[in-house]
Length: 403
Image (cartoon, rainbow, N blue to C red; front, side, top):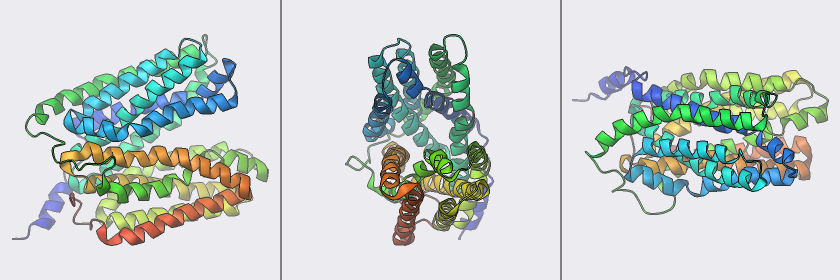
């Protein structure tokens, strides 16, 4: 009476194009639009208000620290209350923080970013928790691929839009109002999900089985594997223009167009692939692609090799990001998904922040080319962690939770 293959086949036939999943992706796209629109503009705003580059960095840090620090607690709120509701509150805080910066005072830039950081914690924790509850167990990789494509898609359009709006009347006020309005557009989507979740939540109280502790230890494998990928990324994303300039390479902007397009286009496909071949092999292939890309960039002396390396890095990032997200969903306790997904989502924020510090320190100590050698070493650590955790990873036929 083995019906596992039939179950797997029927699970694979479940459509992801459901109303809740599409609504979730729309809400996340609009939430991420706020962050990506303001990211390149805020340092310019601080400078226009008479602040230094150092103060601009502190302003960005004032966003990151609360976003990182409160996530475990926000995860518990998502478990005990309503995950899409947490997403909705996060969107409201993103909007209010953006509006607070309309008054041209440096102090309010910091206050606004602290509020936005709290909102960012809510958006990501609520979004990932809602995804974990909504994605069919047999298609979690593919669902994570579409979800992360929606969040990554905002990075292609909105930084350029924010900079373009600076040329409009009102300059910084125009950008802040636009970012707030776009976030407001996402609120009805989140509220729609929250209303649906409120009815289902009464049937079973979530969070009662949550393990004590700041972090959910059950998803630390997925968190660590994703962290080994994201720690290496600032060297590519943030420092590549400096590296290209040191090599005398022009038109490096093509790298971002190519890698962004690849990242978004193939995430769902690669996520579906991870459902078929298993999380371990998929993450291993992603780490291999990332290592290949970093090695090509390390050896590059012209634009062509940098672009080829960027293509491999984009494939690796897409495969690792979608698969580790699915792995976190596999390993999460259904009764404490908020706590688990909040723990996992920290890897993105930590990777961007700490990875930037590591990349900068490595560039100072080893030179820009040596910085990429350090990124290769970090990715190799991910290979070691994958090998150590291999036996604990779900097999292709067992994408359901292991807990």
